[in-house]
Image 1 (spheres, rainbow over the protein chains, first blue to last red):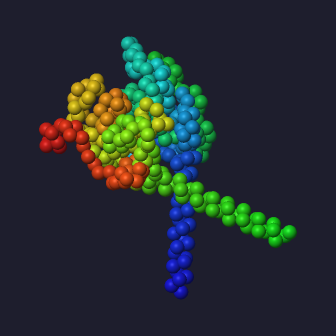
Image 2: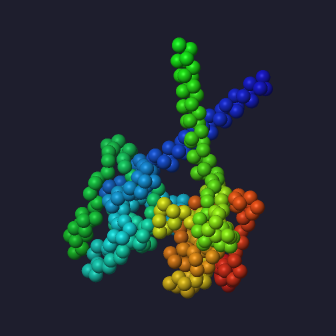
Image 3: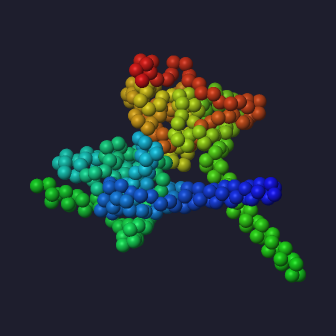
Length: 171
Length: 177
C-alpha cells in the first residue's frame, strides 16, 4: 500500500519534472507569448498577445525593421517591445523628428538601436542609447489575440510614416 | 522474425522516450541550475589561470543564485559580452547600482553606476577588457556566478567574494547609503 502510494508520487513528480523541462526548453528556444504595452501603438496595441520566437536571436539573425522583445537595461525583470532601427555600425538619427538640427550617432559593436513605433510615448534608445544585442529575448512574429487582428505584423517600419505625420502636425 | 521486429520497435520506443526525457532535463538543468565552463585568457590572473597558457581552469557557474539578478560586490560572475553577443566573459563585480566608483582609464574618472547596472573588472589590471573600456554593464546580461573551481583538482575550492584591495565603491557613499 505504502509502496504503491510512493511509486505513484514518484511517477507524478517525474512527469512534472519532465514536462516542466520540456516547457522550459520550448519557451527558451522556440517561442513565448507576451503582452505588449503602448509603445508600439499603431502596430501592436496594448494588451495584444503576441508570439515571439527565440531562434533568430540565438542564430543572430535579427535584422533591421524586426520588432523584438528585449530586457530593459535598467530593470532586467521588465521586458520592452521595440523595433530595431539600427544594427552595429549603422548611423542613426538621435534627435526628435521635429527638431531642425539633426544629430547622428553610430551604433557601437554588439549593440542595437531600438525605437518604439509610437515615438511620443516610448522610452527607447533615444533616451538611454544603444542596448547590447544579448539583451534581446526574441523576435515578434505573430499577433495572436484579439482574433480580428490575428496575423503577421506590418512589414514596413513606420519611421518614414511618422516622419511625414509629424511634419504635417508640427503647425 | 516477428519477434525481432517487435524487439526493434520496443528498443526504438525506449530510445525515443529516453531522448525526450534526457535532453530537456539536461538543457533545463544547464540553463537554470548550474553549468561548467572553461576559463580562457589572462584577464582574471592570478585568481584563475595562474600559470597562463598551459592549462585552462574549469569553473562551476551557479545559475540558480542569479535568477533574480542578485549579486554581491566581489563575486566572480560570467556575463554576456556587450561587445560580442556570442561571447561570455568572466569578471569580478566591483560596484553595484548606485555605487560611486573610481574608474581606471574610463572616460569619466568618477562615476555613479546607473540603476540596473554593475561595474565589473578583471583581476589582471591592464590585461582585461572590462567596464573600464565599455562602461557599466546591464544586469540583464548576467549569465552565472562562478561558485567553485573544479579543475585543476589541486586548486579545487569554493570561490568566496573578495574585493581587491583599494578597489570597490567609495567609502563616503557607502555610509550615506
